[in-house]
Length: 433
Image 1 (cartoon, rainbow, N blue to C red):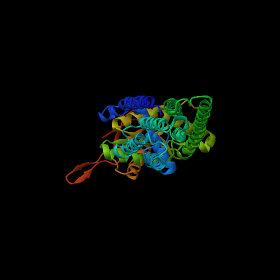
Image 2 (cartoon, rainbow, N blue to C red; image 1 turned 180 degrees about the horizontal axis):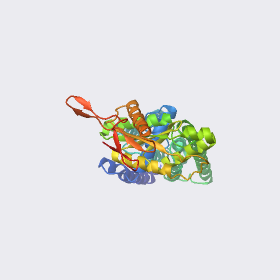
Image 3 (cartoon, one colour; image 1 turned 135 degrees about the horizontal axis):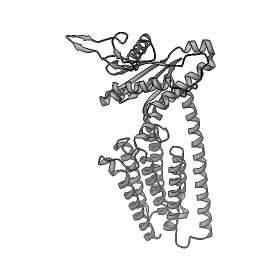
Image 4 (spheres, helix red, strand yellow; image 1 turned 45 degrees about the vertical axis):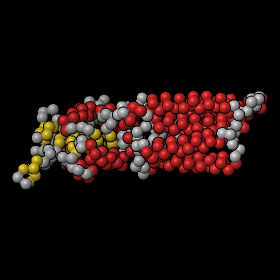
């Protein structure tokens, strides 16, 4: 058994993984963002994906890179890793086929078990973010490479570990990471063959064996990527059908209430408030009656486009039902909410839509804030509904808000939205009284 090549391979593998760990793991532990950590937009997208999965499948956990819930991913890795490590340990100890390298093999397997415990039990679940897949894949390939090298190289029965790693990862992670893992597995297997095969074993038979094995590895990775891509496409289609209003392209009522509940829970932890807009399209019934529902649908689609263009990425805009729309504005104060509401109102007024023999569409908007106007989703929606109908009663095509009650002398003194909850200036913008 050529000891020197194996030792060189071990040193090189340890050095590569230490560099990778330093690059990914150390910055989060020091309170700094990892270079592979998701940015704000990626985090928002992940939150939105988790919320969509919650509406469709009842998942409440944070989703992984491609939507797999982290507890599910951790459970799968634990089961596969521990079954492999314990089974391999028993085989190596019971058969004695690799007596010369058996101590090194057992140490390697013990290191693998320690790594699983640290990553999946000791470290916080979200400390690594998407980098978790890279770290685990690198360590798994390293363990597989050393195991093949220590058990005879080309004669090792443990080549199956490489397809297991790459094929399993392809079902969970993105295609880019899968390709990287396949490349790392290919390099590791080739190095294990050169370092662990007996002297004189490198010949045509070895080349054929390696070629067949690597072809199988690459084909398995490709097949798993295609299957995973189709599964994600089907999942995304199901999410869209379950969460998006088909007429306007905005979210639907079910998704909106899930988002409000999630935002209330977030605010309970952070202490920050948010705002909510409720809008009603003025005189849609008259448009439908005089011009037909085709023209009414055109107006609804146009209003949906105005709302979608006006909100931020972190906002949640939805068609509440019929001719009513709602917008959730995270981390927004009432002043910012009034500005956005007025922007949407003016945008609807400026819509380039030709309606023969009919008035131009307009919206009446109600603005409420959490927690001043309600501490539950139902309370907020009731307040928003009152504010919106206050706009209707005040003449339509305007923005109205509910004033926050002020505790005075043991009683709550405040104004109802239907009376003096907000003052409306000449431009149609309401300001909190």
